[in-house]
Length: 254
Image (cartoon, rainbow, N blue to C red; front, side, top):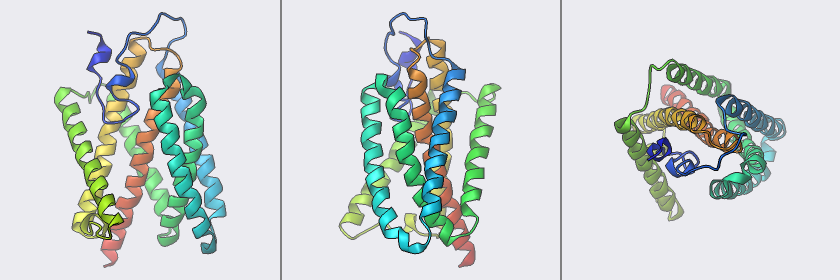
């Protein structure tokens, strides 16, 4: 049994099966530095795409059109992500496409929140960066290492949240949304806090998976694939941060 067979994360891109295989011998292998550089490229694409939307979503009359564009981009991003997970060798070509599509979605969502609450986007960005840098530092220095129980707990909790979102979506379609978790009350704030916490904990699992991939000499194209998987978690963390801050501010006003 190789070290890859011990992988298991909630992230659909960086889960165990993504690396659980025997790689053919090659001189061009995945490195941590390579993943960092690819992640920086994808993050730059997301920021650029989001900025384009941010600059063009105002005034408010642009919202209906941008909402339609966002839905189309979200569906397209899901399809691209699905293909990337299924065909990892395509990650160098598809990861930038995913980042661009996701950036457009992030830009519109950020503009909507920013229009309602001035300064909230900056706070969400700072919170996301702070969590990412802090956890990366803790992981790099060995102060936090995910054991089996830690991984199982994060995976189970993430699956539970995903199930809640799925049920909420189904009920919303039939006109019966779950009110408490989508409102600015105590339950809604606690739910958002749990989502942000889970996203942060999944970053730790992503770090562990990426490090193991480098240690086991995965092919160089897995640098793009790993950067893609890390981006999935970071976007989740950012959107969760936006919702959490928004609900806290609304709760204080009420």
